[in-house]
Length: 230
Image (cartoon, rainbow, N blue to C red; front, side, top):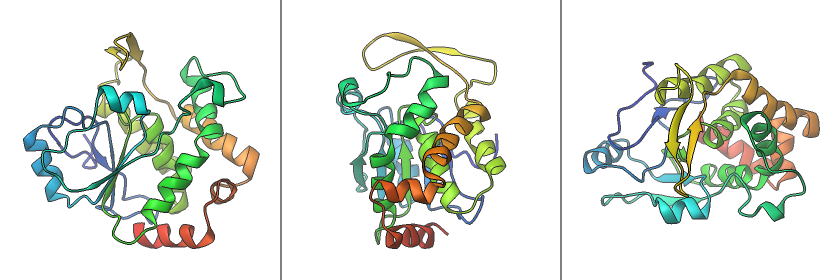
């Protein structure tokens, strides 16, 4: 495994999102959820001095699989990437990965703007961004942050693809049981998937900063988040 991965017992796919573009190491991490975090894992997180955990999962996921803390004193924010209700969106709900990524780009603006707002605040770092397994929702969120810090498309995609290693998806899809008890299949990610989401952002807004500004992010927040993460 690449040295970006950090072994946190009970947390899948935990790694440092920095080291590309101007995003420095040790300030932004990405992972799967903490709902099976062990006491040993909590001690390793404590050593990272985490101040903020941003959970991109739905309220229902949090209810079924709440993050464990084991005495950790970080602040937790729930900023769901996807709309809570299918009725709240004016486009078809995604049925596969190919439609999920543009859909996330189209609907995640409020969540992403809130992520920027938190990470721009004094005392927010180090932080970790996570969803269920740290692959799709986390992948897009971290890609937007890395883009803001000047990382190249190739480096962003290479970091994104590390989830296939972190989740043992290099040999193809694997079955899992979701928060409703339904058996599903976890599929590997590809550079094309991420490109489809970032392409939607560029097609509709011209740039990542313009996309974020359209959802209420201020220039001061963009400046602050770049300063905090670099």
